[in-house]
Length: 518
Figure 1 (cartoon, one colour):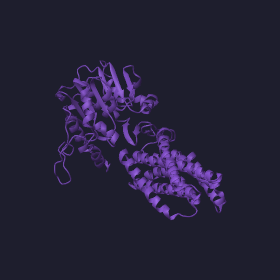
Figure 2: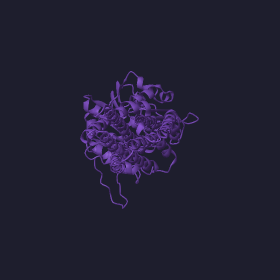
Figure 3: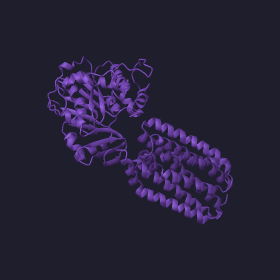
Figure 4: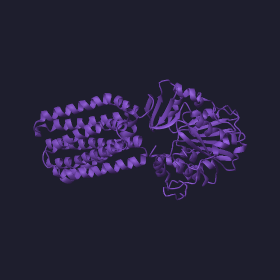
């Protein structure tokens, strides 16, 4: 090969590596979008990866029809990937806000297949072009594929450690779209002698790049306005941590402050006391001298505030995976008003770790364990509602100790609630069931567990509360006929409950079916 052929082949290899980085980033970006907006991260990542690879197969098959103008074809594929992929997150938020239910899922899956197909077009064209300029077919294929696979690794790392935490989902899409178009413009320039109407293609590319830059500068603000439509009240704080999207809203009168994690409501300041008092005080009053308390979740600090009402408590260990939630709860005036600065109290020790891993690694024992974790709507959260998790919890509970577990709604998700109860019971713990009306949530359920019998009549609420009283406790254990453990299917047949396990994580499917109409 002469020097010119070597130069051109190197351009092709570098281009294949860069566009492969962009392709894998779009692939995982779509998975992240689906996880955030549609829920069930494992399901969405599985679907987007499968659809993206299917699209790549379709694109590779269709690329056989492209036999002429290979460089110009590659340029226009990159223009298309840049434009469609760059605006994908922006339009996803817009469609979610204003379109009928289900449209967002259709749009995401369609875009995934489309970008996958365009990505599948790229490599065969580049391989044929490398072969055309004098590189042997085996050598060109191997080098282009190496660039592609290596680029895939780099792209995944860039998304996880740089793009998502630093730019978020909207800006990341625009950044990668810009890179696709810039690669196309560079290739267009370097192969300009082979391109008819070079100036026209260049002008179009520059205009596309300009539109993506405008989207990069202003698209997130517009997407924020779309996202605002998803919430009842104005958004006062929004950030995307390494683990989740954190939204804090406040109504015009500043009377109702609400925290959302990945779109799910965590509390409303107007009625959070109902939830947290039932979550904390029955278990605390069950134990004669609760000195060592473990809170799993509860990064907002409100449960810790309730526990601190007991003077005999010597230490509270609060395990919350996301430092961003704790930081917000320690600095935001509205949340500080609710938690009374509990997270900075000398008795509170904060551990940023997965709750499952903490219980596996810890050798401590606790008088009371409060489980204030998000609902089991994906695989990572489902493991915190399994026989294995509750067995670990049991092993860290002292004889005579008690645990209280938030367990979603026995009204809206009846089978979910009683499956959680059955899972706890399957570990050998004895359970008692509570539910309370929380206006912002609806009717909400809790499972109290202990190694010994739980006598509700023997419980007494001795600390200051806004809602809960000793007299009220027995009534919270009574369930109506449409929310009790006798669950029936649509045909009136009794449903047999079985424990949720890591091997058989059936609770996720039950949860999806239960909440799909709410």
